[in-house]
Amino acid sequence: MMADRYFNPFQAIDINVPVEFHEAFTRYCQTGGNPIIDQSPFPRMIDLWFLAVCVASRLGLEPADTTKYNTRKIIDGSIFGSDPWRVHTLMLIAIGKMGDVQIVSEPRKMMALANGLAVAGLPKVIEMLKDGEAGPIWNLSDAIEQIVRSRNDA
Image (spheres, rainbow, N blue to C red):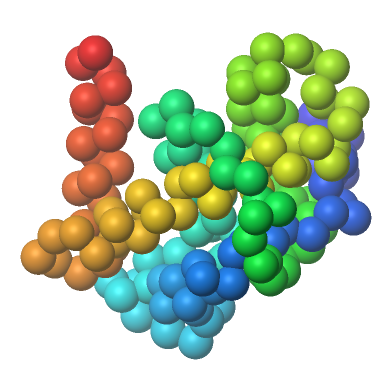
């Protein structure tokens, strides 16, 4: 739908990550200055952040309490304007996690949940990137495949 392309409830909300993870965003994202895809498999910082949200959700991790961290803004919510499917995915994750469809009327609560899931998932994603004998993109690919297969076999 055309209206979906312009719907972004996260427009004015910042995406923050703990300072301790900021180096991973610089290292594994091409926007951090490393355009070699084997070493930096994420074109943009939002891609790494979003994968961390999805991994945490898929693995059933509890959202981290982001108030316990010194955080740094990596991007603002306007980024979702170019990827409306991410808005829908974040809404579905929030509904599933909270068990209440009314959460979609509270964008700040949805983003707080997503940021908490990202913080919970980032250590796992960073481990996936490092764990293996190949380059980060291949290690990540193998790890994601294993998560998908193991969850589908259960």
